[in-house]
Amino acid sequence: MGITSENLDESRMSSSPFLREMMKAVCEAAAKDNTKCGVDMALFQKSLPVFKYRNSDTEQQLHALHSLQALIVTLHQPPNLLRIFFDCMYEGDVISEDPFYSWGTSKDSAEQLGKGVALKSVTAFFTWLREAEQESEKN
View (cartoon, rainbow, N blue to C red):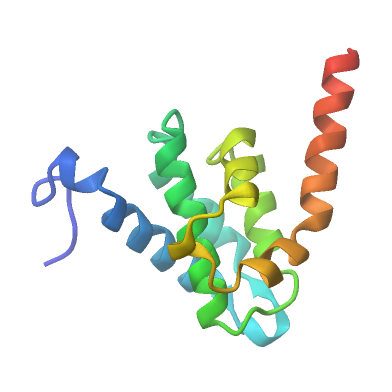
């Protein structure tokens, strides 16, 4: 028996544990040969709409990012993998700017495992995000 809308109610589907597990499952499935930072982009992009209806909830987006950070730690933090996922989630309108910034500055003690390495791996992403934001403010 698979997960369907018939056997999951909205409150369970929007719970933090469910969202974290869903993000982990989607990203883990898309991370092919994690030693070479490969991502099955077709599979990942096909799965992104699952998260889009929650896009307006910043707290849920932050939970998704913390879940992704935890997954990267279990995969032994392959270089560039987190950046690839961040790019895809931003470009796919799954995660907006504010949750990325909140994740980057979060001091939550329960979410610190692997945080330093993760932040370092997405430095270029945050630089790009700030520059894009500044560029849009000029126009």
